[in-house]
Amino acid sequence: MADLAAYLAGTWTVERTMLDRASGVRGSFAGSVTFEPMHDGALAQREHGTVRWGNHSGPASREYTWQPGPSAGVMEVFFPDGRPFHTVDLTGASAEGAHWCSPDDYRVHYEAVGPDELQYTWDVRGPAKDLLLESVLRRAQGVVVRAHGA
Image (cartoon, rainbow, N blue to C red; front, side, top):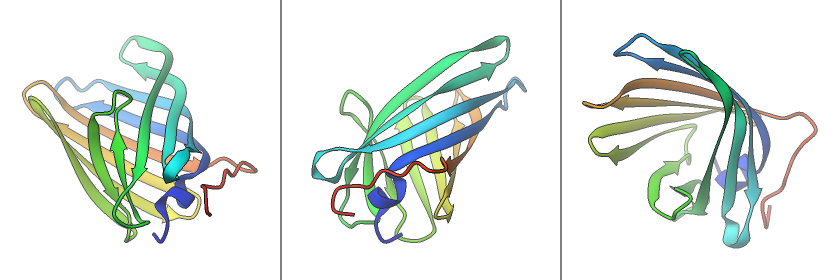
């Protein structure tokens, strides 16, 4: 991946399957995610959609900020309050990342399947959680936002 910000910039559809391995409860999320260029090559990630989890069904959203890393294929992901989340290094076609959220360990695997599809899987293990979250992002047709300098 020569330029991760340019690759991500734009609007994507997102489909996510969720499994609580401890209880066997399955869920899903469907919606859209936008990576909007900000200053200094950063991207604002905004995800909106509908979550179905157990007996719950309703709207859900989340936001992150992606900051440029040491090379164009690397970005640092931050929570909305500025705390670091994890690093995404897609200088190759796939990448591993991690985040410790006491008492649980979050591990992620990213794979750029092609110019219009990104897959990632979160494997969350620990005494509080035992989750598998699998996401597929597909570029929304006809909607492309260019990153600054792209």
